[in-house]
Length: 262
Length: 69
Image 1: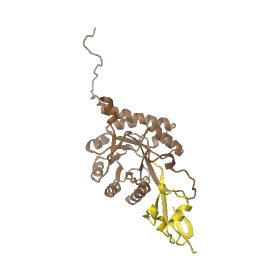
Image 2: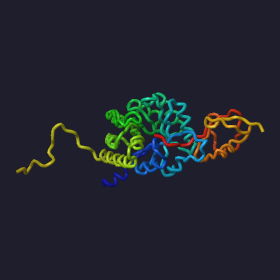
Image 3: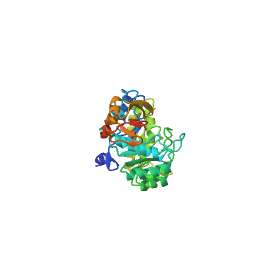
């Protein structure tokens, strides 16, 4: 049954199954309660989180874990803000120590203005992390060769950027994304640069396994509605992809039969 | 008892020499199940903070998860 195949269509990362193909970031929200509510609307089962110093001068500051229950939502610790392998490794080893997190998102940036990933440091770090038993989801360029190298280095998911982080430009290089999707057995998750819900639909129609969105939801005028829009957009794109689109033709092709015309 | 200066999350703190790391964490109201701790760049087993005595110039980092993309 077609309906059954939709229900069985799970996102699998490092052998873990998820119903939702939308991953959301938890940064840039006005408050933790707004963030938690947006996550609910998005239907996301995985959220990215950052590792930072505890504020020791304000002991009563609310904690993210008080708003988003890590038993119900999978925390995906990231290395945002790391510009070299050493810092990324330190951050993720600490993240694992907080509560046994092994599924992590590696992101080593190379430039403070365009926020493009430093792929040489990223490759090196992926290899070390995989050896240490981490399940590594890797933020990377939309470069098929680098994506292949990441796969060979032990990555568990490839996360090519659509466009620079926070830019809202949407998918700039659809062909590269399709090549990356076609050549790998790993899940491909579009990370960074989406601006509106339709960008997520396009990502899914290209065959991607999921999308990660933060700014486009958190900074929308109505974050809850945008979270819902992204949820629906990801579902629509996935269903469209699974349904097998028609081929493109140059000329028209009438929808009504020619036979029996009066 | 002699007092020493240590750094906690980049801030200078004065504590008693050889006082326990567990006491410091207790004073700071740190929920151990939600943090990770580094002492001089080495990750500390959270179950063993009572066995660690603080020394002059120790650098402690206490981190947790916050919102991020």
